[in-house]
Amino acid sequence: MAAEFKHISVLREELVAGLGVKPGGHYLDVTLGGGGHTELILQQYPDVRVTGVDRDSQAIAAASERLKSFGDRFRAVRSNFGEFNPQGEKFDGIIADLGVSSVQFDQGDRGFSFRFDAPLDMRMDQQQTLTAADIVNTYEEKALANLFYEYGDERLSRQIAKKIFMKRPIQTTKELEEIVFYTYHPKARKAKIHPATRVFQALRIAVNGELDALQYLLVNAPQWLKPQGRLGIISFHSLEDRLVKNAFRQRDIWRVLTKKPMVASETEINQNPRARSAKLRFAELKEIAE
Image (cartoon, rainbow, N blue to C red; front, side):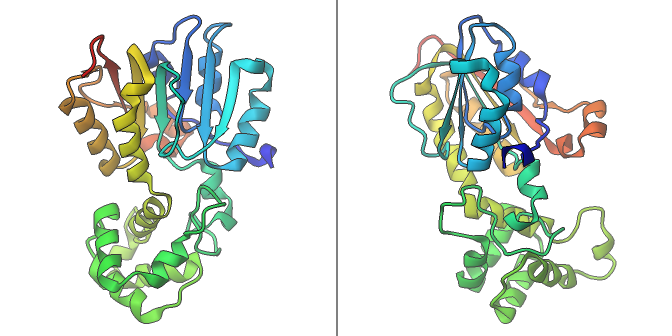
């Protein structure tokens, strides 16, 4: 299974440069994925260590295989970073890449993408019980509309929720994709961004508690960092980026290092189109915390 987990990490050089990796440093990667960012950190100095956290067992297996040559300099922890507890350990830097991995999108049976006809799943942690199908088939119409609007910025949220409510039960990605697609006017169906994109995004965020996890990280990261330790977060949509930006600016324990977010170069975007929406922000913990 590990061999099947292939993911291209975004903003690799920018993330590691902004982290300011030090000899002998210990770093925390709370979204380990396939291990791309962690590998680059470990390569900086022969005595650097990284603890990698991920809720997806496939990711843990793949990263552990990829990074086995680093021996005990790398440690994997299977956990949702929204529940992670370092047990008092302090780190020189923390990174988070909030994007869904390419593997999760490209494995049809995971139910993240409407490109495949698959069960409506979308669980990053396949041991949890809540799935996208549960939400689609049990939420009240108004709750569905609010979800699509708040998490997906979906302007037709009410119309889509009404059609879903009328056609339930809905069990597959294609069933949901078609409902959303045909809610749109024929001209709008030809837009560059597929009409179902925002609804699928909203469901994924809800299923995996992504915004709650991010809030947890932003609140707790200062207690996990050493003074002058840095926190770098890559976000992929405005909800996440706004939370990160506000958290960095509103708490005076942070020294903001990126007034404007770092974005991918045209070269990287050409090689990996999924990097187009990535935004990276950094902040450094001040010497004297609150």
